[in-house]
Structures are given as C-alpha cells and as structure tokens.
Image 1 (cartoon, one colour):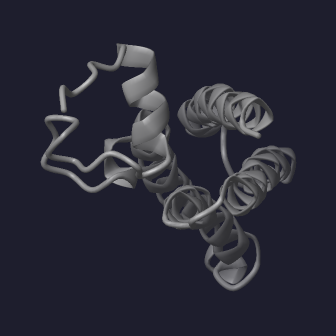
Image 2 (cartoon, rainbow, N blue to C red):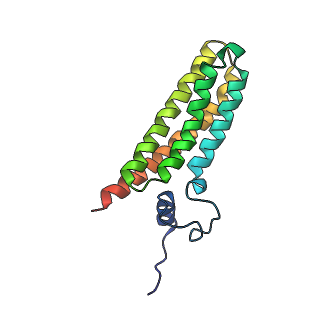
Length: 151
C-alpha cells in the first residue's frame, strides 16, 4: 500500500494531536515539545518567574506565588491537553491555559499598579503573553475546525 504524503498544514495539525510520531514528523522531541506555542509558553513561564523575584519579600507567598503558579499553568496545560485522547479534552486544557494567560496579565498589571515593578520589568512578559495568546487561539481554532469536520 502506497503512503500518502501530507501537506505541511496537515502535518502540523496531526502533530498537535499526537497522531503522528515524532520520527514521522522528522523530530526527536515528543508531541507537545514540538509545538511552538508550548515553547513560547515556557519562555513566558521563565519571564514570569523573573518578575516574581522582583517582588518584595512580603509578597513571596501572595502575588509572587500566584504569578508563578499561573505562569507554570500555561505550558503545563498545553502539554497535558496534548496528551489527551480526544479533541474535547484537548480543548478543555487549552481553555485552562488561556485562562491562566488572562490571570498572568492581571497579576502583572497589579504588580505594576502597586509599584512593585516598573513598566520595563513587565514589558517582556506581557509581550510573550500576547504572543502565546495568539498562538493558543490559532491552535484552538484549528482543533475546533478539525473537530467540526469529523463525523
């Protein structure tokens, strides 16, 4: 039986669903690690941790911890969703990741409003938050469209 060749878009869609092995995609990484949105979410988590270090010591168990937890939640939920077996499950975890993005933005703005950090301190994390949000939105739209096209 002859193998059919998939287009780049089809490979990307299949890769995001873990239906194509990393070897078939020409990658050595596992499914979620090959997702650009996951990689950028990891960059965001690191940037959020750096901002957390700038907060005063009395915020160590308050705003700082909440910010870090939200930062970790984004790539963790993208990865967990990618490991799920159905589109609705995957979309559920992507929705949680999206909510965590909104939480990060809120907490960064609050840290700025309270005078704990400067606008320059939060510029990179906010830019990464916006990028991850766009990429996550694209992945959600692609999965919804794929789900709608299936019987």
